[in-house]
Image (cartoon, rainbow, N blue to C red; front, top):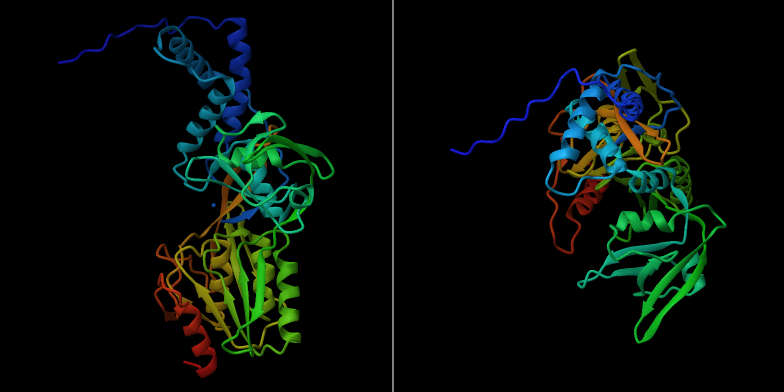
Length: 402
């Protein structure tokens, strides 16, 4: 039987001055995150400044453990930043909540741009080819395109920093920056030797809404919402106005693969289709708050079908659930994801972010969203073929009423 050596430590050994200082610093950090214990995706962005704490018992044990690791661990130890981020993740894991999460600065920066619906950048799509090389595809009329980036260019470095070993999220974070600032790309375009190309960042908009009249029936307007950002409410109003002006008398709202976003945007979008009744109720530790529909929405009386699937989640389920529960339209497709919680997003001092589950939301009838998701009124399985069968079924429903 294998045996491991047991090393006894002096439990009363005092901390050195350096250790005491570090312990105090980590104390505030750990307790800051643990204070949310009562507390991807319906989200709100708050402005809250949690109170600090000075209890040092747990950090003292932390540094006792870490000192032993420094003395005895066979292998490389993480640096101070990795250690801090690891401590945060460990603290959050004690909450047993998959939606209370910590994002390091690259992920936090990208998420903030996505939720805002715009960011300072150069307007390129990134992916790795079969050889693992970072490949670029510039958006039309983007700063990258205007500066000379071509489809298929290989990105070697950003501001002289080699990108080959970085994750794509890390590379995207390097490309983001203040509007008007310049970033230098090192590109490869075989057989041309590698060269540097400066690009001036501009505001890159991320439209969350697309729309058109359907070819199958030009009286049916099709509105797709990919996510709920700070711009979605305005974009939805513009899309509905354009569709109505073009002669749409029926609507298909496509929420498939919409993983959520900002809860306020979802409420404002739902309000375009509802003229009375509850949209949702948020239940917090401090009590419950119900968001009500208001008269004056642009599409409160048009026949409506909503496309959903298992990737329709959170804020998208708020909209789908309000429409279904209010008898305003039918859900067509497959059951939704089944996420009924709301997260606050805190931007931290180093650019990272913290998501904290702060509320549960209820459907207009006061019931929580089922764990198995919202059940469609007209079940239709998705297929991998060229035909979009859920859309075709929604069209048939709007044409025939069944």
